[in-house]
Length: 54
Image (cartoon, rainbow, N blue to C red):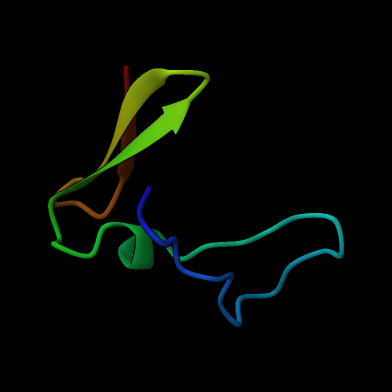
């Protein structure tokens, strides 16, 4: 499994990890996220919105 970035210096509460989406999507296109064996794709649109698809 890849090494995920550590939570950045974004404001956060004590019980919530916070990640900058651009750190997760290092190639600028997409990132695959796995949960319970299912893969989801996170994309940043040209308009700067996030899309998560299964």
